[in-house]
Length: 398
Image: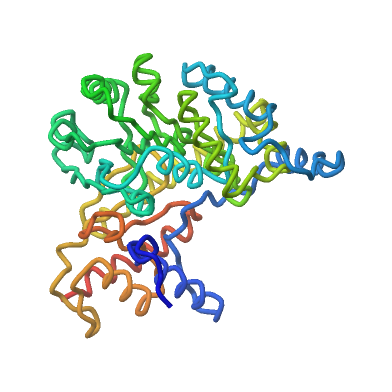
């Protein structure tokens, strides 16, 4: 059998092997501590669950418009105007099967063979794969520690070529937890305003999970930037609705129509019940209480992990948002732990899982070969126990 070049160009994820093995070990009864979670460890709030039950009772189980119900698109417009200061019409909103689906729609609508898409690294591992699936070329820009792992206007200027179609900007960032403040976003916007043919795909899925800092959407910087920005967001992280699969995009009308057409021929509408529940999620004041509590818990865990990492003794990127800590493990390369060689971040993850039953995510697939990622979307007891094992591992590497 001969597969398409498109299928063959997609890189396998190094994280899947670690995650799958950790789950099997745990199922086998081993005391595995996992720092791999990419989702909040909170249950979906009861008021959202009740809304879904209400939708079922009302028989709302049929097809909806492919781009989402009018009610949900109105609720998203209200959210974007109230919270982000950006005004959109309902026809500029496309509701999809999760933010990843929204990203896929956006890239498929914009990118074709020969087009370049700038991706700052470290990046979420799906970005370059989506670009390749649209026959585009990912242009990776390595972010520097002296700049706080943030893209600078100078780096952006150097990366743009006549073939540049878009830049993917993830703020707050997975995996670094870096948050661009308003001035930094404004500086990038000013640079981009000089390049009239470059779009911004602004992934803002972690916008609600920030700790003591403020940011803004790049689409709010000017009318010109709004016209050339596709805002991507969703319900997964903010409302602990990862399994409900509701994401959305906001863009200019031409792009929105193209994305809606692509979706209509690929998946049609998102889940009707989840859409109904998402309206309640966005419009109820109960959401503010849930978010305040979740943010407080994550901030406490963040502070705990950062403090305990001092004992581990490896450099980290202190996050201001999301729920990840990246740890630089390069100093361990060339050493051994209990006879096992450490030559890469993947080896660190593999040996820690095999020897100490602790799962961390190697970041080769995130464009950060020297790092592993730890999620603090887990309880404080697990964080303490897991980092004791991490400390033991580091001290045992000779």
